[in-house]
Image 1: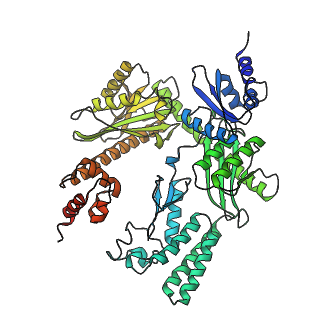
Image 2 (image 1 turned 90 degrees about the vertical axis):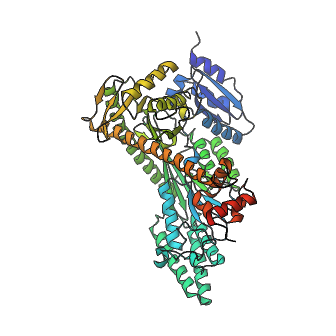
Image 3 (image 1 turned 30 degrees about the vertical axis):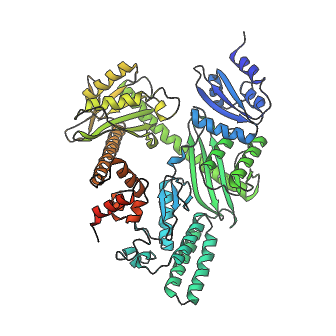
Length: 611
């Protein structure tokens, strides 16, 4: 009788030697792995031959019941299709980057006096430039703060030239940490030169920024503009100090990214160092669990996706590991096309660059060790929690819910997610309660859980991932309500309430019959306390946001000719009611849907009839 492996190998041997993408499916038809190859037959057949494989690959292959494939004309097309299908199916065994929307950027706005601001959204603002994404918000704010202090770029919320001369200069101007655009003494040309230096620093080109500052200092000195020349001198000194602090690891003109991969049977870590002008300017680590396959075959897709989410591809990419020639050629072509110039990818075998790769590998290994220790500690808490609640599975994904309202208005239910003992903020959601009249927390909780659980059948997305445990900010009544809902829906997920004491602090967990004390197990108590505080904070914040929107919209609706749609358009365009108040008639009329008469009515409402 033909075995499963023989059947799959036979099917693999019928594949063409062409570029393409293959998808592995389990017995239920669910996609568990997506891969690509320049020669489909050779790559797919390897999985089902008696060749040596790592533990993660063996585990994946043991679950494969069938596979499908898609032929592509080129290797680049295969790489692109693979990335798209990984996002579509979120296969269990693939490594993947988090969605780009969660990455922070630095935005340099357009106009006479550009601003340098933090953002998470890349919009099509004409003339605006974006840098990033960066590894975290801490990095972004440190860079912005550095530019503001070094070059004297304003850090206030004033908009120039509109606000020039309207208020007294702030303390930062008095301390010499701001150019003082608000004084009217800084011309657009002078400010533009400062922004040009900032742009060079953001690109990693501090030497060009230093040269520009030196030229400006000499020119202003010759023109006897000694105050401006002194600002250039101070900025130059700050830049030199910055260059001395950065860790130099390569030649002064080096423009490289270095990738290293550490993997074992329990976890994997990819470490990336960004090197600009020979110095490490940023670094990032990516962690993958025991099931996800991180090896030489999956790294080209990872690297391609890494740069797909970024603005810039460096001139050279160094790898601490070997990848197959066909993958290297494919990735080189893909990144060169993205950069608009030749991108070099290589694995150094000796010399300083090999030493640099080993340094990044050591970082990946040490970070993986720390990740594993933290995971073991978190898993221990989850094991103890599962034991106390008599759960059948480890509660790796915990979802918590809390209802917040102001009277019978603005009722919201916040949902937070704790994955492997850590909050996963990208999975947080809030539900605006629509069907409940008056104040009824039980009915509100039922509506929110009904809407959430209806998405368990989704093929992808965070809602498709079923929770191992649901915690409700409430007592036995809340638990009874949600359990009754689950029985109606044919769903069986453990549900417990987080009970508070008279001082509104965590006391115990409960089901619909009894309370389970957690006070004596400090680690479990701390976890539940953190979850209860976080879901309460989140639900209140979402309710406050909804309330503010209602108040600001209703305020604008008092104006003749302004309804909900126009009020919303104004708030979206200006970013808040305060900016609507200070806008000119022309600015108001530039908003889509706002006529000249509307603009006149709005202006008169906030300023009176100046005529």
